[in-house]
Length: 483
Image (tube, rainbow, N blue to C red):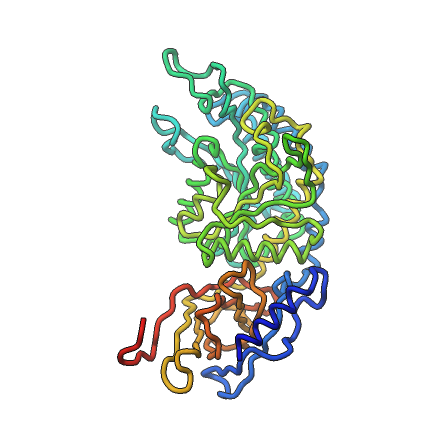
């Protein structure tokens, strides 16, 4: 019976500690026989147990990129951002030493320098728009993101890695300046108060700038997909900068593989003194079969493959309770997105003048950036996710509704395909069925009890994100069948 075989295999997997090897092992007894339309009907399934790396292997080029990440450089970048006093969206744009204008010109100059060092491989731009401000009733405002594009071999597929460079004293309780006479004081709109923003989000911005440096250095000719390193404006005013970029990419008909953000990413000590410098959180939105949740599972696999001693706490929700981040506009527009954040959050070091450099742990932040780099590199080199994946129940014959046909469209540069399997209550996949180089496979699998996903394996060995099949239909209906 498939139930006993899968249960035994899952129990075996649970008994194997994270360091067990190999990460993919042949199952003692395969999940049922299977056939494909293009292969002999008696072809056996290559069924294996998956380790926590989900079959991902370490690419030496990506590993070298992780090694290049320098916590001292990240700290220097953050120190420079803090030196501008405030990076409030409404702050001074003409000063050379204070305000958001000076900050973004410095960011642009840094990214442009990296581009010169790689013979122009980065396309650096000010991404400007006039946008409505959710917290400001006085009308739309001009915002400016700073972007660095690293074009890939496929310029239609993009990965967005972002952080917001604006800051504010959003929870300040004393009256401040920066508003017209007679206007009620709203802390979030105070553009002159000192807002260092070392952790929120100088930490994330500094990590993204460092990622732009190391990827442009290691991959001056790009990877498979295009990477956008995004420094967002006006996150503190309602995710405005990231909303603009998400809308721009939708209008440009880009295939966004991931809209990711580093935000509040460098603190390791809670208000009560509790410290955690060895783990981080990654947030992935509901439902459990969403593209964002699949991206989160991919992130976990990349972390285990490249930096296993720096662990992830996966959080199965869009963001912290009643909070938001710059991955949200991507998720809301149907694109996969996740948030990377520190494991121990301390709100005394956010949105306040006390958000200072001394509370950011840069070796910790560098490890978080290394997880980013592993995910970016693996995603960029992976083939596309199989399109139009479907699972259809076979209701007649000996199946009795138990057998299923999986089908999908062929993916360019795919050498083969795999079916990932997990129980509906399992947070991560623990089985893989090698389908071969076909686009249709029949399985004796009672799918009502499992979630499954189809992924492509590239000619380079890299695995794509999985295409979950959340909607199933009967292709061979029978009269009077029960719902």
